[in-house]
Amino acid sequence: DAMVIQNPRYQVTQFGKPVTLSCSQTLNHNVMYWYQQKSSQAPKLLFHYYDKDFNNEADTPDNFQSRRPNTSFCFLDIRSPGLGDTAMYLCATSRSAAGIQETQYFGPGTRLLVL
Amino acid sequence: AQRVTQPEKLLSVFKGAPVELKCNYSYSGSPELFWYVQYSRQRLQLLLRHISRESIKGFTADLNKGETSFHLKKPFAQEEDSAMYYCAPPPSGTYKYIFGTGTRLKVLA
Image 1 (tube, rainbow over the protein chains, first blue to last red):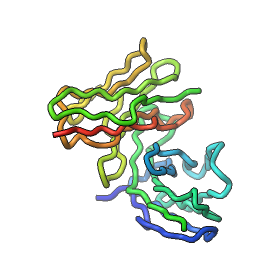
Image 2: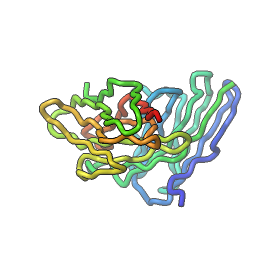
Image 3: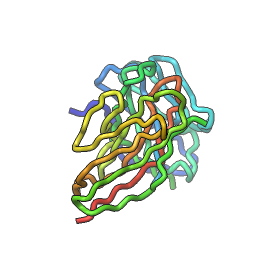
Image 4: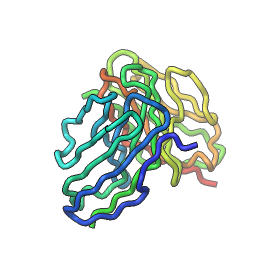
């Protein structure tokens, strides 16, 4: 039973053409995260939502935006993708961000290729 | 800066040999660290966490405050242990939530 679902699994877009990646969860977790993982690198946190509160990482480019219309869904919008945005994008959830024991549950990722 | 460090990018061991994946941290106090694993073509998933004091798939990890380490150990490596392993702090406002750079473990037949 998939608990964190990402769509699409693969996305090809053209340089500068906006793209939206989707994440949904059936865990009813408060927190949803978006990570960027480039080839052979560790996942890099872009931002996260604690309920409706948006928390952006300081070094996340303005080109990356996110929306969370409800508890279950979270979207990653890349307004003008560049070639350097080619990466795997991971969505994750956790029950809360305040507890020190909170495990993150990851989706399978969306592999984005910018041509 | 507060972070975790995994000094080895690649670790190769033979099947049946002991394995130790290193993780050092620079947080003060006793951080509740996690080990995540990513098998080929699978999603990133929790392997074990310090707070649980558990052994998962034969792996254990102990927090050593003196050495500020949280190394992952297994006495006898199996081929199915081959994967990417990440050390990570918990998702708490106290910590800068950054994964370690990861160690690729290859268990050779």
